[in-house]
Image (cartoon, rainbow, N blue to C red; front, side, top):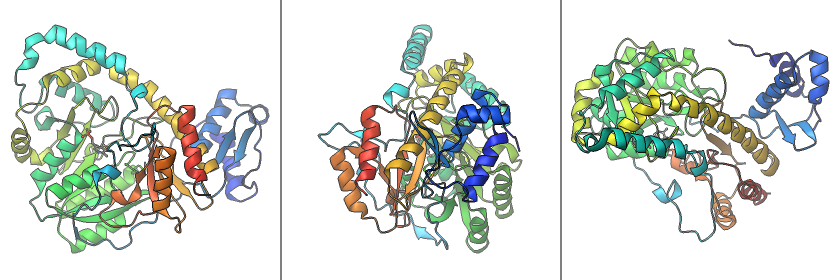
Length: 467
Ligand SMILES: Cc1ncc(COP(=O)(O)O)c(C=O)c1O
């Protein structure tokens, strides 16, 4: 495993905190003191403190320095489902609880929309590229494009994926109208109505909606602090015929967890043993805060059972309706379904994304976007750890833009959401992330928008409403 320079001192700090030698509230050594003690540069010490902040071990008070964080806001998992059962995918929750904008008169601090906020969308870059595309392609944009997508775009996707060790074949790649459409196609290609699919628990409600619309049945597999519970999946697959497994190995929405390569391998082995389609949602894979881009399960697969999909909704803008699916051995059925949903994805978006990839503008944008997201993650951690009551726990991701928060189990959640509505702050209730009622005391906070003073205040007030 890679070690970082800052670990020469973060290991010592972490040990003292974990062993209870330094209690919550204890003031930690200054950057200058650590610099002298460990002979490291200021930036190394700062990087180390940022890492401890990210992991919820310390908090930073402006002009006062670093302190040991209150223990209750640590990287504890939400309580997981223990014995998953097969159930009908009946979606009980209205979309109004998820991403729909409410008719609230107040200016809302929205932390419930899983998409980049207006100021974090690279607006200038996108509008300029759209204009260039219209000028250079002209009326060509008004025709149908090949049903499986533009060959130049597929070539760019393949080249970029090769950079993180994933090999796609042009023939198995389908360009889609976003990630959800890719999921719809993948599930339709592998399953028939009534089949059972294994889905993460918690899982983003839009994925649950697709499952529900396709009239599939589900088994919910717990996703805890260490990510996907491969052991539970293993047990489920030995007693139930599962037709597809849907998994988000990188920065899962909403918990933000990642699967290690060992877990990915174990998951793939189960899929191969039982001949199950493994549908890999890699929509957040490009949004790692540090280090290199995490790998995909597809990179390990030589059976064709893995179908990987993604889109540019989370990394560029949700209005860029463009995604893709690598359909593996399900290609021919997937092509049929793709065609039935419309014979061509918008040429304007295809050409725009092709250009952004060809010129490396996409990667340049990602570099600054990821830095901004990492800063927002630390800030969120600090705000929540200071404002929310004892007994609150949260999982803090190393990428993506979700923070999954669990409140103490006697919290009156209806009163909490009502207070949030009055304050003018919106989170996504945990109950919409499952077909069961497992996540009643959880909610998702999205930090993909700039933190104005009003937005910081809104989080503080929401926490105060619970005190
Ligand atoms: C995990 C996950 N998959 C898919 C989607 C939908 O992506 P798209 O807008 O590209 O259809 C979302 C958006 O919320 C998501 O979080």
